[in-house]
Image 1 (cartoon, rainbow, N blue to C red):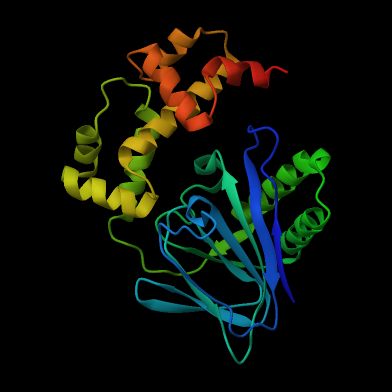
Image 2: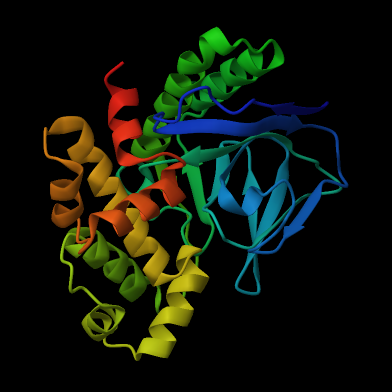
Amino acid sequence: MEEHLFFPAPTVDHYICYPDFAGGYSHRPEHRVDRPAQSDDLQLHRLYNLHLILDGSGYVQSNGRSFELGAGSGFLYGPGTAQRYASHRDQPWDIRWVHFACADAEHLLGARGMGEVWLFRLAESSVIASRIEHLLDLGRTFEFAREAEVSALLYELLLHLAADASPLSLPRDPSLPGIQAAAEYIRLHCMEADLSMTDVAAYTGYSVPYFSRKFHQLMGRTPSTYLLEARVLHAKRLLVSTSLTVREVAAACGFSQSSYFIQCFRKVQGMTPEQFRWSRRM
């Protein structure tokens, strides 16, 4: 069995999560992936990569070590994370995968897969396996009228994963807790116009060059890009849930000039703040 299913881009952009590419392999002992952090392979470095093993076995390599995985286990890579995994040749795995985008990943997935692969085991894998199979069924006969169902199904799948999966032991990059704390600090303080990366680096206790390098390596984007994304995410919430003007939203999200806010919002969202607000009120 070998299947590759591509989902067309959704007609609206407000889904919390949405699949880009899904499929499965079985009886493929040669299945192997070695994808760098900034791969141009279908732009997959911008997406989450979830794999669930239904049968057989394989391994994931991380930090110079190899980790054996079998039925009922799986792995998740976040965006911008180097990926190395393969099926065992003598007992090839039966595996399903979903590459997906997630607009509010910090709340839904926490730090899972960010900076390093997240390995997990499920005491009962049938629930998530059935959701993946249903997702594949929708992909085989895709209809735009069912794209909301596709997003909702993936969301349900990820909720079960976050709630039911037990992490497997994996040596951590010693700087990862500090970088994750820095990401949380940026998210909580992104509304402050005078927030600087010097302040955030000082919060972690790292030098600015080391902090910037490790943040980019582990989080898949620069600290400045992460700050911009956090501010735009906060702006989206205000645009939908309040009647604040665009100028007031800009000020509330740490932008000193509304024109720069509009420019940044368009860069991240592909539309102006007013267009975003109008699209959510249809």
